[in-house]
Amino acid sequence: MTAQFPLVPTDHPTPPQTREEILADPGFGRHFTDHMATAVWSPDAGWHDQRVGALEPFTMHPGAAVLHYAQEILEGLKAFRHADGSVWLFRPELNARRFAASARRMVLPELDEETFVESVAALVRADEAWVPPYGGEQSLYLRPFMFASEAFLGVRPAQQVTYCVLACPAGSYFPNGVTGVTLWVSTTYSRASIGGTGAAKCGGNYAASLAPQREALGHGCEQVLYLGGEGRRSIDESGTMNVFFVTRDHQLLTPGLGTILDGVTRDSVLTLAAEHGLEPVQRTIDLDEMRDGFADGSMTEAFAAGTAAVITPIIGLKSDDFALTIGDGAPGKYTQQFRERLLDIQSGRAADTHGWMRRVL
Ligand code: COI
Image (tube, rainbow, N blue to C red):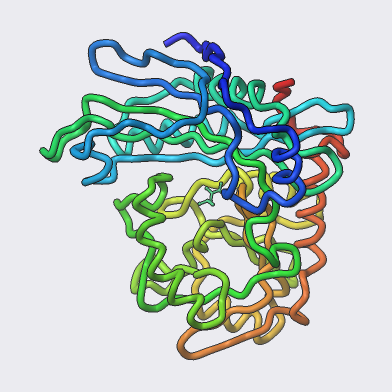
């Protein structure tokens, strides 16, 4: 497949005034731009028919395998407007690599890195008017995904696959994403097990998260904190985010890779840790260690990290047999520093010393 996604412009673009109204308060995932990037794969032709065209519904056979067996993967990344009007993607190569890893796990065809990045960049160029203005915390959220579109009810890898990228102007993922969230530590549900699909970004993982999410909401919490490992006693990740803990001894703890998602924001935070005087440590974190740590003050802050959620302070934890407030219930010092640092790099206010930004326009 060549890395080209030629534009076939929509003949019914959103009126500029409607677009401006949406951009004034986009929320998350509610509004879509005018175009989408697509490509189709079959064993004989490989990837073909790639283009950026009008956003429109798919015509799909009801026997399409994705509707029955959930052979599907997804990504999430963002485009940011800088003060000079230019538009940049944040570390799209990492999303491309994770997308390929997810494809291998779900036996979908891989897209090479260049094609993945170009599909996203071509959509951003087509829908440039939808990239929110510089100055706020808004961005254009990009959602590449791939699914089994072959009509076949036998359980085997699909012989026809569709790739698509959607774009949504995005504000905060959680309405109180800056002030902080409380997590429900679920002892009923787990997210992943060794050898399962926890490290793959596949739709089924998110479908399975809906019941625990409902459980969390029922306990007054915004999200779940999953347990994993032997006897389900160690911290895994949160619903849509990786988790971090700051210790009094200036360590930045996060669960090691394996069953969790290899988050792009997670990797960025680990890289930035030293700049904030913290030693990044990836290891198993026991539930009791976390509880005791916040009780005796050896753990001082907790936050979650994800593309959609950026850096979200964790201000409380609840479970069947405990409830604790972290610190004084307000976002911690390091949490705020990481959030600002990341947003400054992404929006061009800070020098891109790690070479993370990729210019699109
Ligand atoms: C992201 O942070 O980009 C995600 O994919 C989480 C999403 C399920 C909202």
